[in-house]
Image (tube, rainbow, N blue to C red; front, top):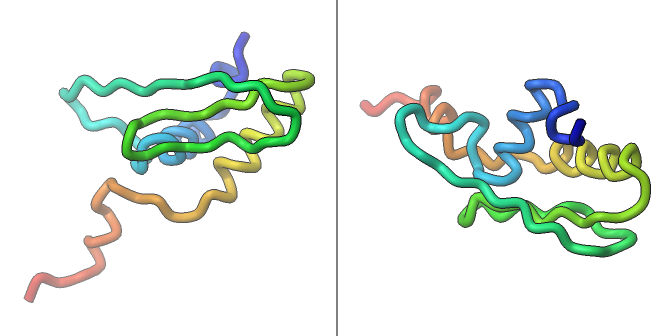
Length: 92
């Protein structure tokens, strides 16, 4: 089983947000996400929200790679294209 398949749904949402700038895909719209594998011994993954892609640095053991990915997606901060952040504002 791959690292991505082992992830909890909440972490999958964070991964999608890290890669695409949104925590869920648009219904009824075909979207493509890409994962590019690179070799490096000490790099965190890099999300490219404009291109819906992830630069995934392959190194070491599976558990270490999963640990680094989870750190990156959980610590990335607010990248939100869901539009929900505007719901607190009135259009008056």
